Structures are given as structure tokens and as C-alpha cells.
Figure 1 (cartoon, rainbow, N blue to C red):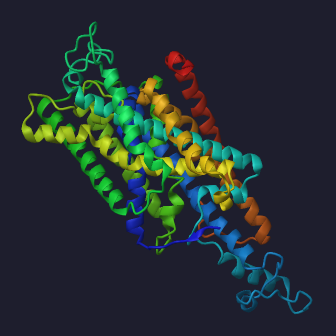
Figure 2 (figure 1 turned 45 degrees about the vertical axis):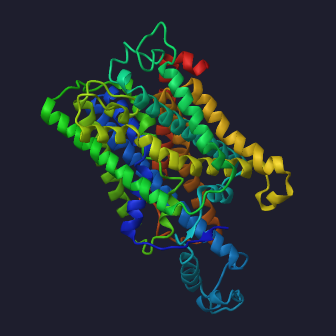
Figure 3 (figure 1 turned 90 degrees about the horizontal axis):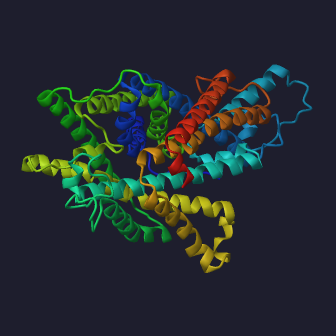
Length: 497
């Protein structure tokens, strides 16, 4: 049963929250992937993938309205009373169907009036609740497996990004030199490859273990009252992205064009696809963002403006980056490692950007880890009687299963581009494309059966034709196959690990 929403806010505030949810860690991987696909192909791809993400976002909104209607209908006590008058609907009293003066047209009008008012977005119905409501047993299992894989991938990306950022700041002198001359097995401080006592890879692993020791214990508890922490994170995020775009513009003005990206390179599409899917991910958070909005009229139109702004923002970030730098790192902030020749103010700014993932992802890691812990618990335990299980199951096993695997993966597998490609292309595509599409198809069928007559959903997706749904599913299959082939060809050793 969805919970009633608490604090309310305007449509504008809601769109800002959605913007902040979407523009996060994934955006830091976009410039590197963008440069591999070429500036023209990359631009077309971002625009197209933003459009695809918007389609399925409207599916989530439609499903949420359908779920509200189904739940309210069942809770009203009218589920077994197909014909209800406007007056008796308030009193939950069935109509006497034997009255001869009830003609078909009046019955249709009454049913329309009663059932259409159930379509709303006021109650927060999460994707998991929609899956339970509309999916079969197999669909529910597939949903939770996809969510778990995605959250594991998220935690792995967070861990790798934090550790890699810390490594490049600590070993900043070697980070400023050629990566091909000084790889991760070179000395962190003296750049002696053959007789290195503390390599860059050692530094990465120490940072990873430190990250686990500091933030890992949070998964054993529940994080509450994160409002102000999230506000600080949002301010830092906006400040970091504005600074990165400004510094890239400054470099272009002072130094001219340094990067020479290709115009069109199909080989770079798989990496860009994974990064884009990850960068436009918001579908699992949409219900929580939409429910508190006071007036939801034309929410689809307003949401489209959000996606247009985000797409423009991503293009600005990527295009300035690929032409300002000769080489782009997998994590864009790593291109702003401080150098000795920079002034004090510029060095402080570069340190802030280099450590930006450490600050922001460290605040998000406990929340994401607790979400994963609760999801795994929901699959294997009956959460309604959680206190009946022994202490090991309730307090130890699932928190350990939540934080240890991502750390072990990133301990020996630090390539963020592959982690993003895998998470975005497989689990991400499932959450962003496949699950919303199947949800909307099942929700439409369920509502048609429950409300019988042709009652319109005011929050129906503008892409209501079923061929749009088939198009989204076909596109997701094509992209997953394309990314799989690319990963097998380019990274066979890592995948075997």
C-alpha cells in the first residue's frame, strides 16, 4: 500500500528535484564516451537517447496513475460492484441494477465519473509496488533481479570513482604525466616502474579499503534526516559542473582547440550508450519526485522541458570537454588534476573538482547501500515479520552481502568505463526501457479489465500507440546486443575475470 506524501512543493521545485536526480555521476562519464563516438554522432546519440528515456518516463507516470486507480478502487469496497452512482459512490453503496430506468448511456456516464476520479498521482507508488501489482511471478522476480544488479553496479561505480579520484590526487605528480608512460603499476611518488615500493594501484586499493571502513558500517543502520546533507551535495554538484564547463571554455579561449575527436565513429556507440542510459536514469525515483507536486496538470509537458534542458546541459559539458583536452579520462573530473604551474586559486579549484566524486558519492553511498540491503531483504525475507528472524539474518548477513561484493569487484577491476557500460547497458536498460514498457502494457490491460468501459486516463502517455512500446523494446535489444559484442571484442580478459 503506498504511503501518503508528506511535504508538498510546486511543479518548478519538482522539476528541479528531477533535474538533480538525473544529473549526477553518470554525467562525469559522458565526455570520455562522447569523444570515442565523435562529436556529430555523439550529439545525435545524446538527443536520441534523451528522447527514448523521456518516452519511458511518461510510461512510469501513466503506470503510477493506473496503480493509484486500481488501489483506490479495491480499497473503496466497490471492486465487486460494477455499477455505482455518483451519490452512492461516496457511501460505498452498490446500485440496484434491477431498476429499469437505468439505461445503458446513464450507466456508462456514471461509471466514467466514478472510475476516472481514481486516476491520480497523489499516492507514492514505487516501481516495486507496481511490479507486484501488475506483473506475474516471473515478472516480479525479473524486476527485483534487475534492480539488485543495477544497485550493485551503482555501488561498484561509486567505489571505483572515489578510490580513483583519491589515487590521482595523492599521486598527482604522476597523474599529470603521460598515462602511457606511467601506468597504474608505476610508483605513486617517484614514477619508478621497476622498483616501485608503493604503486598507483596500491594507492587505489588503500583508498578503496579506507572508503569501505569509513562508510561500510552505515549499511548496518538506517540513514535518516539526510535533507541538509542532500542540499549540500546538490550545491556542490551544480558548482562542480559549472566550474568544469567554465574551465573548459577558458582553455578553449586561451589555448585554442586541443582535442581532435572524430566526427563519426560507430565503434564508440556502445560505450556512449551505456554512459547515456546511466546518465538519464531517473525512472526508479520518479514516483517519489512526482507525488508531492501540488498541481500535476500537464506534467508530461513540463517533464519534456526538463529532458531538453538536461540534454542541452550534457551536450555543453561534452562538447567543451572533447575540444579543450587532448585526452579525456573515463571520469571527467580526473582531467582537472592540479599542476605545479597553476596559481593558488586555480589549484584550489582543481583540487575541489578532483575530489568532487569523493565528497558527493560518499554522501550517496550509504543511502544507495541501504536501498540495496532492503531490496535483497525483501526478496528473501518477509519484511512484515522481520523481528522474528534471528540476529544474524536481520543485522549481519544482508549488510555484508550489500557492501563486500562491490568492493571486491572494484579491488581488481577499476575500469570505470566498463563498469558504467555494463551497469547502464544491461541493468540500466532493463530499468529504463524494458520494465517501464512492460509495466505500461500490463497496467493498461489491468485497468481495462477493472473499469470495463472506456475510461480515459488523464495521465496517459502521449506515446500510447503499442508500436511505440514495441519500438522501445526492439531498441533495447539492439543496444544490449551491440554493447555485449563490443565488450567481448575489446575487453575479453576483464570479462573473464
